[in-house]
Length: 318
Image 1 (cartoon, rainbow, N blue to C red):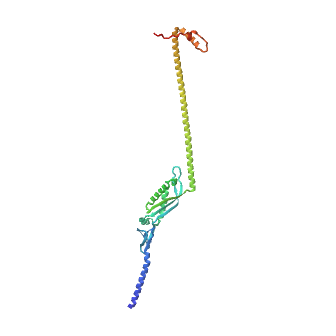
Image 2: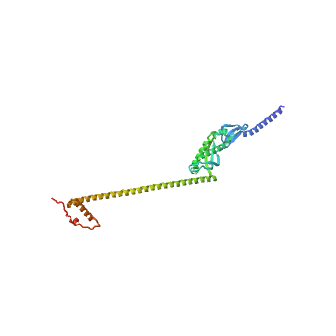
Image 3: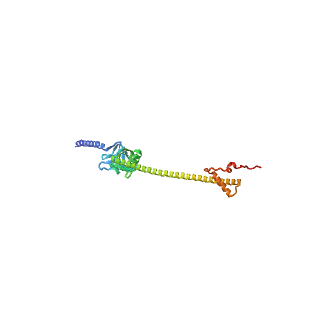
């Protein structure tokens, strides 16, 4: 009996060993989990779905056990491409606001030490949250940028959009990602919007033209008033000058006549005294005769009144 039991026990032991070996062959590969270099990993229990967030695994092979696996998140740069994003620009001073479409391309990466927080707060929906916040940030920032800046100051616009996106991502709950590349792509203006914009610009030019015409008309009127004022002042100055000159000539003539008459009176008195005429009648007669002689229309000759009959004397010298 003992001889029969011994081989039986040996066969049972061999089966058990074989079964254990098969079990190990099956279980051991299932107990290892792998992570590629472009992924991060969090431990996840297969039976319950629970995720351990306090440790982040990077590329490699790890012994987790048959009931665990890795929940993976991208470790490399992720690309977000926004096509035909509708934005509204600032109207500025000489233009109305304009609605148009732009393309945005950016890249971002999940922060390695914050993968657990990202999973706890957003899980696999983080990409849709990033896209939503990016749209909001760009649209809210675009209303402070004039349309011309997209062509004249493209780098400045990109910088403003980038800062707006990063600030929006930092709102609670944070996205736990870092923004890397950011570029503005194609800019499209809808035909209807372009037509309205052109009409607005044309109307602005017409308004400016009318304003310039009014200013020119006003300038011409003011110039005409100034010219008339200068002409009036010139005429007044000429009239005043002519009147002053005429007055001075008249005063000079009067003064000359006065001097002449005074000299005549003095000369006549000296003459009468020299020839010995003293009575009033003789003086009147002499004056009458002299006046007759001085008349151009009367041919009268009084010999004793001529210059030849006057005895010229000179002062005696002692």
